[in-house]
Length: 81
Ligand SMILES: [Zn+2]
Image (cartoon, rainbow, N blue to C red; front, side):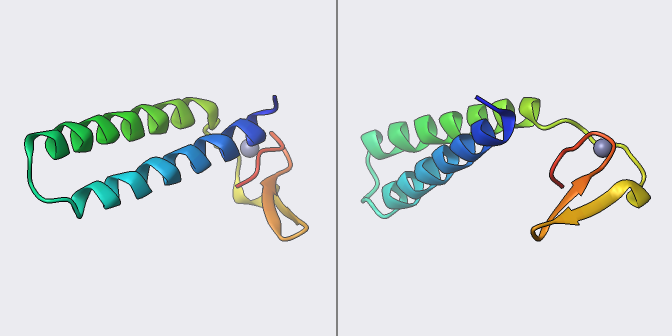
């Protein structure tokens, strides 16, 4: 699996969990709501940590940036920006 594909999947997963979190907030207050809410927040924060590890920190100068099919990328490390 390429990194951009993995990132797409992780972003999809984060969006899905954030939707669940929003739905849970609509429930009446109860102990189980709090448990689910905290659990979802932990899952989302873990996914964001994984995503952060997959994204290289491109430090190349702006002059190295180009656009291909509307997507800006770095010509030095080939990473989408
Ligand atoms: Zn770069």
